[in-house]
Length: 112
Length: 113
Image (cartoon, rainbow over all chains, first blue to last red; front, side):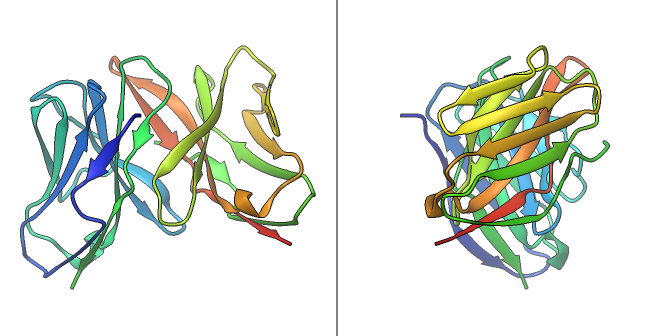
């Protein structure tokens, strides 16, 4: 069965901390994505990656960076967390040219 | 990018049909999708339609596509309480050789007994 896992379901951090959100997929997918989901705003794409060590900016990359050192793992990094980064973060993966993105369960991050 | 628009909330009674509407922006979109998000979970693909189709039916789900008006709808027949969830419309966009999905804000469907 297809599986995307995220390292934490809930995370509480303080303003200014460096935060790592990890995503792992076991389907050998080339493509991986990070979204944030906010009430009334839907899903917005932060970054995506089409291959190891490759990254592309999405619609809202400011304040975030990513790392893809291995095919199965895609990390989202908040260099200096701020309260406006309190959100639900969703990771997804897919095969190239295939329609379905498979989503993880999400990490609810609260920045105090 | 431009927004994919959906109404935010729909309430129906169990057994009724539900229709969730979406307006997308890119006339060159090749695929359009409906995803479902149950409480506390990630998104799950429900169905998708290729842009050269007008309609697609899959059991209780019917997708209608009006390319001229860039309008997509999802009809759920005989709606059940288990269908209560947030439904996202999404369009596939091509940009510099990459494909990404652009999601609407989501429609919360509440099914009452």
